[in-house]
Image (spheres, helix red, strand yellow):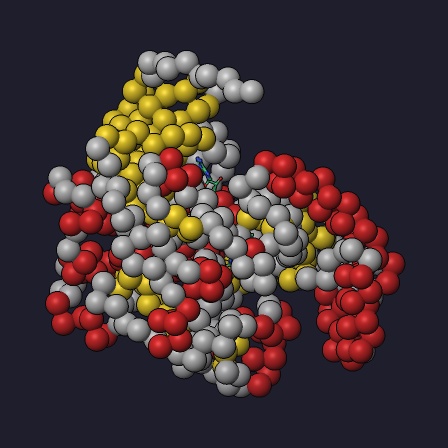
Length: 454
Ligand SMILES: Cc1cc2nc3c(=O)[nH]c(=O)nc-3n(C[C@H](O)[C@H](O)[C@H](O)COP(=O)(O)OP(=O)(O)OC[C@H]3O[C@@H](n4cnc5c(N)ncnc54)[C@H](O)[C@@H]3O)c2cc1C
């Protein structure tokens, strides 16, 4: 049985140079970069706050921005966000002068305070734990200061396309269904909702072995005596490991991570066999992950030293969807090219990647501009976890710091394209790199001869 939806005339509520759909790490970075580069920019977000999984998903760790030698490869807006969080005392990270240090006490401290990502090859790397509520405020502040027109509680429903060229987006909100028209559209929905609607090619095949194929519902537990817990874990490791296997066998979660403040931990989790684009599966997670949470917390508070007086603070307001659609773009970043450490001429972000489980031989991975560009649809860019990549590359390059870097590049390029009246495909990558460099985005020295900081 089917229902035919009647065609309707929609009000164009606004026109803009650049429309960014999705206000997660990639989308906020894209909107702020676009506006700061002179474009009249609109950002639409389906929930009532910015930050995507980093805030609503309670994913509370910005992963490595520097390599084992202490060199910082991610800067730009990601660094600015951390700096702004620091002014509120809302993030915890190693001191910049300690990056690359192999001082065992320091490395030991960060490994115990944070997690394994805080050290690469036995040396301290730059990661940051943060307070998600303050991150929401910081992102609001950045978007407001940049002059971005923000629509919250607005779901990007459909692409408006004419002759394979994006014209705008239809969105739904309590004000009804309305249209926005723009010169360039950035799909930062994480799930590629807009490029799928524009009929750009994409891949949504999953490798069930990969971390990224699993859904999650993160929750936070407070009033943990972390010092007592850390001492137990260190001195009675076998007992700790047995407890963690026991809770997993019972169907609960063992994967905890410390939050920015030591009395709080967040339970990251991995629920296999579900699809982040299926409303049934998303509903299943909301119901069943909470049952698992109750089981887990009951177990921890009865059996794990340090958790005796703990309580559940909250659950994530959005399901943890790690990957769904991946654009098939002008270039697909692959596992093989990461292994070979291929430096692309059009690199827009450099990612320290060796810390991952996939044994990446090269310490750095380069993301090319072409991986943000769809094949045939014009006036469209994709940024964030839905960028053009194979399954393993996506698994490694989807963390928050990578998405912010991609978003900053997409927004900057969108502004360049809108100003020149061209499709982002025609933007000269050297002009883009020059602009990124001027915004404190570190790019490889080998690509720099043409870059003059303005
Ligand atoms: C459980 C879990 C743990 C993780 N752990 C880490 C970690 O420790 N460190 C790390 O760096 N990364 C981690 N990640 C990965 C990281 O959080 C994401 O890859 C990253 O947030 C992706 O950013 P994004 O902006 O591309 O997408 P998202 O964060 O998903 O943001 C997309 C935004 O778009 C909005 N949106 C979606 N569809 C629409 C639409 N149609 N219209 C309007 N708005 C829309 C969403 O509401 C959201 O705000 C984890 C992910 C999960 C799920």
